[in-house]
Image 1: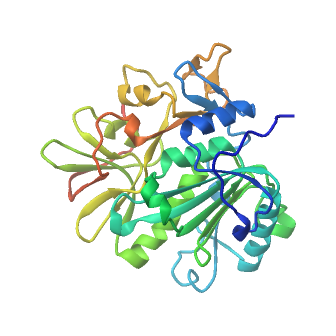
Image 2: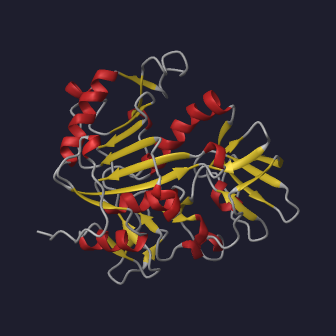
Length: 355
């Protein structure tokens, strides 16, 4: 049995229904890296980056993503195979089950925010069962300063319990895993899957509703960068079409690699504080910026690592969807803050970065 590590900073989660838990609050990436190793949930690579395995799920599960259908959403969401309705009462019961599951456990909480443009900021509290999931949240969301944390009040809550398995017959889910958004209670509830992408996609999905409805702002699944003359380019494309690769250009400053808003004042801003790049067949020669971003603080997902810590990026025996998450400041040439003007060039990507 692994002994508990000492608590350096904590908060109470009882207001969320999580009772008598050992809560690690706002740990650094280094501390979360060490926690993951201590618990035997990951290994250190020769890059100094952490390597973890997300388990059964190595990608998102769109058929298990639900939105609570209530007074806020019933007439404003396009219901169907993508936006699947979920019963409010079943959500409440499932939420209670998840919080009971997390009670008396060692859990990891942090405060962060989405949206680099100040008037659009969404404060987030993230509660994770596993330290590497919390480290992913550290990497991918924007990181508040100590001063900002003093008066921090979350707008949204993410509760993430990969070890909790739903019972479809009683819980209203399709299978054991689920990701459910509740816009009335402002909660993203994720269980039964360790795939970290569900965490970032949960907030992106929330912003896809919040920004158009309340802020007259277009949310976009795209990457963006800016040239020396201030001209902004955005790159639209599905997963794996080269958004991250093409926006990481040594001659242009990176705004962000995946999720952005376009305001009515013609400002493009990043939702995130990090990058989540595919690493299949990654090489220093072809993608130097991403390769060099893999260092202490980064998390490699579902890659094959040998006993000496060497990573085989060509090995897809676990999944083709091998990934790395890292804070955006692991890229040398970034735009600060992560925003730009009206785009001069818009690219629609259909293949991948190399055609």
